[in-house]
Image (tube, rainbow, N blue to C red; front, side, top):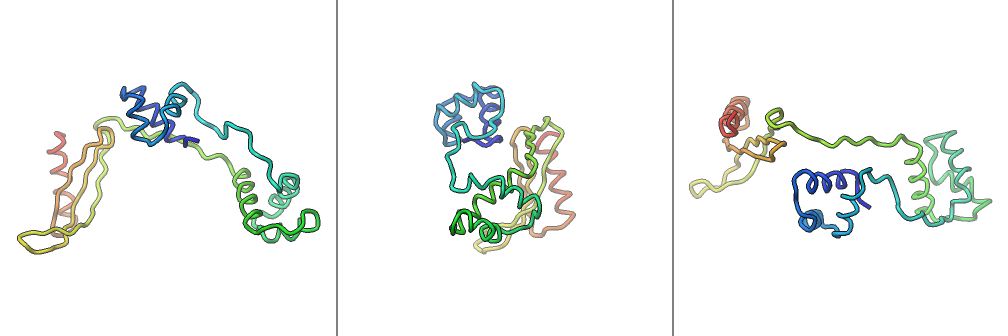
Length: 180
């Protein structure tokens, strides 16, 4: 199943940028049919398309939920001990996975906001380090990277040190490079 962000990116690439479906499928490493479904579907994916298979602990689901609501910090091992007379001995991995899924269903659903940047409004700046050979000598180089997320344009400038003066010079140089 596609994540919500991948679904949004596929739709954005094809519907807004006009990238071909085959190219979108190649870039994301998914089947072309998956891309077609994502483009045809106007609402975001919400969960499994096929029905969930039956699990060993499904008959105990309500009892486990009660235990989790009474004590949210109760361990899977403790729940297994409580259920043992009814279910018999369970594998630790089985009970841990089942309880992890139930705990996830008790939490609030995570929201998603697709990041969009208006051209000219946002520039991201950061420092990094790399090794470079300069004049036959190997030296550590600090570099300042500036990125415009709206156009995916980058500017990089190397420095001997990582100081405030270098940051300010790099930002000024990036503005000139980007035409700002």
